[in-house]
Image 1 (cartoon, rainbow, N blue to C red):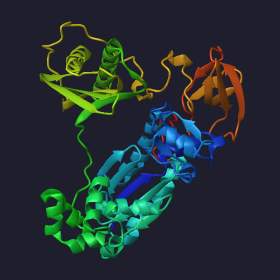
Image 2 (spheres, one colour; image 1 turned 90 degrees about the vertical axis):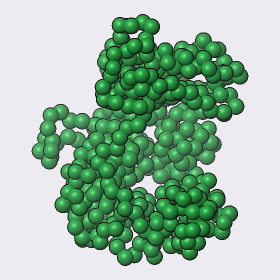
Image 3 (tube, rainbow, N blue to C red; image 1 turned 120 degrees about the horizontal axis):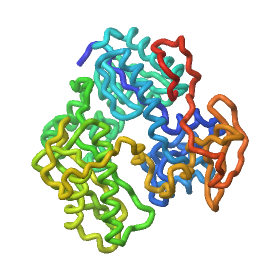
Image 4 (cartoon, helix red, strand yellow; image 1 turned 120 degrees about the vertical axis):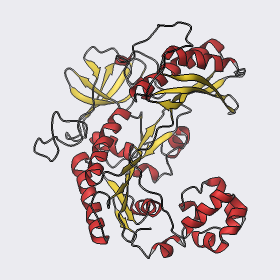
Length: 458
């Protein structure tokens, strides 16, 4: 392990919800919940104001509404979040060539590899500057952890939340880890945690005291060895700049179980097309087609078929998915469907399987509609008034959708730098109302470092 805390872990604070609050002045300081708004939707992110009521990510949205009935509930805007994420990742890559993104809002950085830090003082300075740069460029906050290894850097960033910086100095790791819950360590989820608890092991210190042999007996060779090493603060995992994509997939959860076999088939075809759009967007192809079906009783089935060569042909993927569906009993209803492609490659082979050979579809002009949650009503794009999404009115200007129904849409007319705005209600077919792109959270300045071209989101 290193002798200086030069591994940095950044975690943006309540990222989706914070981005929405920054974009919508009327929601600042208030409880905001982002996620699927249908009966089976789940929470993607909750603001810190919402967390006070017990709302957290991955919670069923219905439960969140019971806990925080007065919170603002918004549909995610993934393109908006991705644009902000790209700005943040750009700041990280300015520090080091070794940046390992874990998600849109989280990444490891090897500061030593970029010459940005070599001891405690320089690492602390790099972390402080990064937090300031993120706030200046995006208007948002991130928490930073610094340590001599990845595991400890992530633990440090958790301790730093929200909007803080924690440095774990080499030599202090064991004392810090000892009293913490076993769930603090990577790879210790609910099942492993319960298994250890039943064995009388509750803290990291107790893992170390149990010994490696006992952990291997309890958890198996690989997991036991790894957990014992982590309890001793040993983590030699390097920061990896490129994480290989293993699969591309899409799935939808339905508010009401689908019983009609014909509709199930049509949904699978639609998902196959969405999956191919993602595949092509990443410049990839794949050999293995995977179908996922969650039935009315929550039982989940997966079926797969491996082709003789990689493909990105929508016809091939649709036909393979249809064949896989034929082997699944959907009697009783379906609550979730998914289609994926694995065995990825960056090239394709001539399609030998499609019955309609030569029938290629052009997806280039299709918008990335696969990011829209399944709960959004299937109406024409220009009339889809999703809660939280941006709109513009020809007379009243920019705003965002607070809600819609009964032929009306309620809009809060405000921008990131306008202050809280007024609320107006329009007909859903008002010709003056149209969908709009998100506005920058921070005013673009042509003289800022690295600025070029047109202003972007953030």
